[in-house]
Each structure stands twice: as structure tokens, then as C-alpha cells.
Image (cartoon, rainbow, N blue to C red; front, top):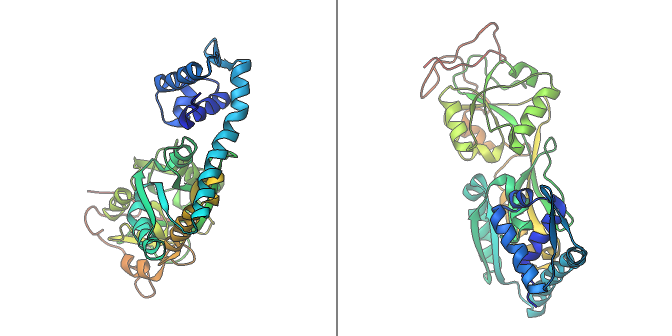
Length: 349
């Protein structure tokens, strides 16, 4: 009897989600693929595992029995791989790493260089995944571990089969156009920033929800004029005078031209994390890759997420506070109704 891991994971997710559609969304499959996985398990076991009840599905007695053992089977497989690695007496093997855009550009190169220097027998194949799906990619077994972002105001789901290992905590500042009148180094309250035009991801994303929640807690509703997911694009739009956007040191390393970094009075944070299967943590190769990623996340970024190099690049270090005037690369930033850092930023291009 064959019980492939991908099919067992599908059965486990179906026990949690209770519908084919929800299980497919959680695992990143189509509903048809979920049905095929369950059908294949039923053929292998010779038992009916699920039955439809209206729009939902329920596990049969055989399905519940198999589900009870599935998590232990998957855990045992991961433990066996870890044991084999330890038995070889060297750190080596092949790993599949999920990455998102910023991590691939900034964190991955130094991490892989460090890993290659210290553990040349470890081979890493990376694939880009949606940052909000990092946890799901590991849970579904498509990657061994994945870089992701976790927000205190919009935390990732937790599951006993997957752990979140924190690499670094970053504090958000606000990116404003470098020529903005009144934009200086004094901390800005989020309530004052409510008058700005904002550039944010969609409200349904973890990032978009976290920033909106922090703003609402401070008593303001961000006026989102441009919904943009890509960090480099949003910062380019800030540099062109189209609005303001949240910013961390890691994000600033993607682009700093035409941007002034304004500290926020409130503490708004995010955690750079690695999602990894609980049993896989015991693999020496996994531990080595996590250590290399942590070192990469910590290098070159200051204690609050904006290091001296990125400060100088953005024109925000001591003695470099810009005055008002035209914004480099595009429209004019004007003040509406008041002076100082809370002046409304609006493109006049």
C-alpha cells in the first residue's frame, strides 16, 4: 500500500477545512487536484475516506483513522531524513527554499555565499512564492522551508506541523518624497499621517491589514490612492511624489532614490521569519541554512531597521534633511491646510 506524503497532507487539510474548495485554497491546489489526491488514497487503501454532506465533506470512520495516523507518518518521514543526515556525520543534502521578492534580492545572495563557504555539501534550490503563502508552501510539502513575514497586527496562522523561526524584527518608518516640505527627522505620529495619500498593498494581504490596523489604532484611516504589492515599485512611486509608504531597512535596500525616511512615533513592527516543518528542524542542513539566513538578515541593517548606509543613500542622515520644493523625478509635493511633517502629500503632475 502506497501512502504518498502529498496525498496525506491533502487529507489532513481536508479534515481542517471541511470543503474541497477551502482545502485547495489552503494548499495552493485546484479543487480538482484535491479530489484526485483523495481518490488516489481511496484506491490505495480500498476504503471510502470522505463523503459529501451538502457543500461540505465529512470523514468516514476509515478517513478519521487514516487522518489520525497521517501526521505521525509525515513526521516519521521527516525524522528519518534528519536521522540519516546526522548519521552521515557531515552537513549536506538538498533543500528546497521558498523566497519572496525582497528576500530573494537582499537576503538570499549573502546567505547562500555564507552557506557555501561553511557547508559546501548543502545544495539549495530556491523558488519564489507568495509571501503570504510561505507557511502553506511548507505545510503542503512543496518546499522544505520558506522565508516569510509575520506581523503582530496580522499574524500568520499557526499549526503544530510547522514552526516559525524569527530571524529579525524590523521597525517601520514612513517613506516620503525627498522634496516634501516639512519632511524631517522628527518622529511623526500615525494620526498626523492620515492626511497623506498612501501607497499600500491590498487590505486582504497580511501586510496591508497590519498597516491599516496600526493606523486605526492610532486614530486614522490611511487614504490609499495606489494599491501596490511590489516593494520596489511602491518606493519608486514615493520617489516620484505620488504618496507615502511604510518602510523598513530591508525594504530601503531595494530602492532609496528620491526618498526621505521619517521615523514613526508609534512602534509598528514586522518579523522576518522562516517557516519550517517541526521535524525538519532536526536536520543539520536545515539548521545550517537557517543560521546563514539569520546572519544575512542581520548584516548591514541598523537596530531599528534603517542602517547608516541606507540612511546616507536616502538622504536622511545627520545634516542631510531636505527642504521643501520640487520632488525629484516627477510631480510637486504641496502642503494643504497646514505646515510641518503632517502636510498632505499629493502629486500635481
